[in-house]
Length: 554
Image (tube, rainbow, N blue to C red):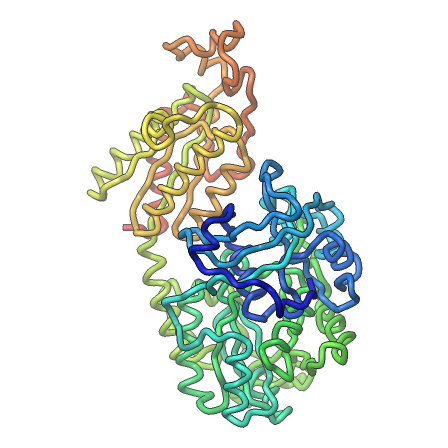
């Protein structure tokens, strides 16, 4: 979208709310903010079909402008909006953010999209899984007009629009600004990379962390931002500025690195540090890295002049014991003793309360991470029982509740499928959509319990893998999640069926009954599998109890 928006109509919130409304997902929300504030210049809206096709295939908009990432508004196929309609895009709190004029409605080829953008269809990849599993089937394209930019209540002094940041650089007299992309805390090695790069290029530093959506399992942005603040105050005062980037990362490796460079240029940076395997998601299902270590640096370097930003390849640093300092890896000599701590070792030390070597990280960073560890240990937990009707889910769940009450004296929220359907999900039927909605509601309530340090036990048939996976992801972001598959044979379930539901389903009197005329998708990687024909409920419950006890949730 590269049209001139100088004549676009502006809308008041009252005017905007008279139009049809569409609630934004988290990714769409962050994308829209960066479209509106100029972070995604030259985009003026979500990509129409012509722009989308060329971006996917060639990394360029229809007019030839470089742009590597599809920025799309995906909707369900039954959404009625068509070309020419105007709709208001609202956040989850019903606040109008922008009005969109629909210029294009199209069905994308998602397989082509993931192959071109991510280079793979392997759903081990964070971005691929998002496109193929979570993104809806229809895309709407069109220009947007701001109603009100998103308002934040936290770290307000570090949230800047591109023009604000450029103005600050000018007022400070900073002519060269080297931007550092990060979604992790900055330890000594990161600091050395940034510090050396800035000195080599006689530049000031823009610490520009992503605080939108990052990779699953990343440390929360609040902890990270507090650590960046302390690090700058202690070691980079007057040389660095912290500004938060509300970006939804795709972990697209080389393409994402190019995208990040364009965004940093929009925010006023003149130089950009590109790491090895920049924005890489890790390894594929075969254990092979998705991208080569220098693919990202090579791609961004190829377009350096067109973007108008100087690429600074990140040099990996190593701590040399004899020198008590860091050196670029290519300057390390055979006689040097190189010290290292893996990410796994670091996390283990942190959670065990062991001292972290000062050569590895700074006290102010460790202080914030120790606060996080303390909070992690207080996280709540959700134990989710799934299995056929009559398998014994509720019996084991109630037994587990009793054991927790006896041994911990802690309140437990019980979310039994039958009870939930009478209250929280009253009115829902047994179509796949309604079943998924029921499980989504259970997951949402359970996640809120876990978020506040509580314990929730859920027992529901939950026949579909996708709905269970979404709950795992939702709850896993705020607490601990344990899935228990009660794998009792269907013959035994039928024998226990005092209501005769299985018999009715066999006779065709009851449709949509899981296990008879509706599928049950067996969990692939549950934490526990029990068969109640061979193991009693309390013994099964005790196994689960001892496991969650080992997590330190007291």
